[in-house]
Amino acid sequence: MNRNEIIQGDALEVLRTLPDGIVQTTVTSPPYWGLRDYGVPGQLGLEATPEEHVAKMVEIFREVRRVTRDDGTLWLNYGDSYTSGGRDSYGGNDPHCKQATHSAIKDAKRAPQPSNLKPKDLCGIPWRVAFALQADGWYLRSDIIWHKPNPMPESCKDRPTKSHEYLFLMSKQPRYYWDAEAVREPHNSYLPMSHFSRRGNHPKKLDSSSRSTFPMDGPREYNPAGRNIRDVWTIPTAPYSEAHFATFPIKLVTPCVLAGSPPKCCGVCGTPWVRVVERGNLVGRDRGGNYKGRESDVDLAGGNRMESKNDYHPGMSYETKTLGWRSGCEHDDDSGRSIVMDPFAGSGTVPFVAENHNRDYLGIELNPEYIAMAKRRLRQGVLAL
Image (cartoon, rainbow, N blue to C red; front, side):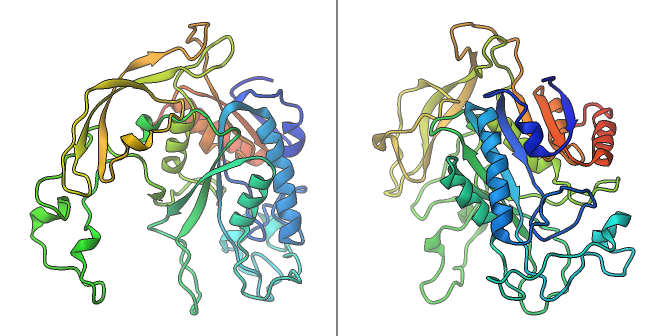
């Protein structure tokens, strides 16, 4: 196996040729069921029933789990779909339809209506897949909502316009590499629940200073490094100049790569180097309105260390500061680079982000046209991410 390559072929067949335990994290977005035809024989998403699709996904991601390190993770982006409601094609007769980008798609036929779903049913495929992978051995750690502020317009008149997709964080073991410091986000002001009246959800009158305070008196202090990343990510969809209409944005992939893989690892055994974090005083105020301090100490991020109940103070957090990195194994070698994989590489977003953040990548893609796109993209070099 060569690093930093995109292999042409069926994802399952290629995965079966890879060694065990080589990948640190996988970030991927497989073809969604019943949504579009990419015009390539053997593609996913055209199975006759949701059950067939889910079974295929389990088979593929069982191999992903095998090639993943024991401290590795999977980030699975998946959007839902509706039953066809009687439509039997993807692109219809409109040559400018987005689903008809490729000539082979214009005449493609949808699978028949599944017997256990009604016309216009929301299929719930993302959660069907997530639960099936959980039952097969993956640890389901988080469901992240990718909120799209610029969703694709829809012609529906009897339901809300879909403006989100799911991103599932899964792990191979209960303890895994996780770099919380790399993905801390800025603190935002918010309105506490006590600022809303009990009769209806009308906010009380607030002056500008009260937007950043707790219900009790006194200012709220923040960890200057930022807050722990939340599970709703507002990220616009990003246009792509070439003929691939299902790319996911760089800003969606970047936090997955940063949190799920280290910037350096052991060149002998691949063990991630660990961020050394100084944990300082508690900042903010707890629910009783009391400020509490704590002696500074040193904590090691990356080992998924759980806080004890005695360390938990609702509404407060510890100040953190990165002091450096330490070896996670006995070799004390930092010459390695972790591998980030995408078994549905498409236009190469994941390889592009990995390379720009000093990680190695491994991609798999069935469509040779998309591989050519990805290689052109990678030749663009470093982009300000």
